[in-house]
Length: 215
Image (tube, rainbow, N blue to C red; front, side, top):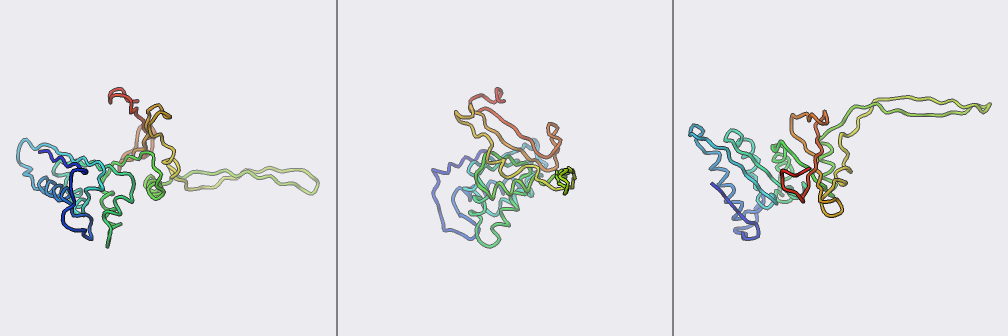
């Protein structure tokens, strides 16, 4: 079954509710999600399904978080694409709106961050990747009354971000100035990436090439 809902062709129905926009497209999506969760798991073949939502904040309801907590058993995969955290938070505005947005995002175990100029989103991403324990060295020089100098080196443990918030503002975003190359930083819950030995993976691809020709 395919549910294809174009945002620019869908009109607002009903009224604004505390839990977001009650829109025709959102109502269709909720019905589809309920149908996915209600599928008979004993039926064969029991095929996987996916939900792909560009400009996902246009479709959000508070049912999404509940759906995400259960859909794995129904062989469902979800891809939500949006520009920043504020989009989710604004749509789910009202009592507990921020918590509802956080709950939904936490259920999406793979997160891909592209170039972003939204400070809150970038700080949130920095916290998501966490900190590394490192030793920072401090160099010092002192001079005695006789004019001789003494140098010293000391080190102390420190906690530094694995990925700093500012790094998300400097990722390549395609276009002629980047030769069509777009960069992203990927996070997946419970995954240590072979190429970095850490919980992040920096990837790049060409927007000028077919998928098999990507960098």
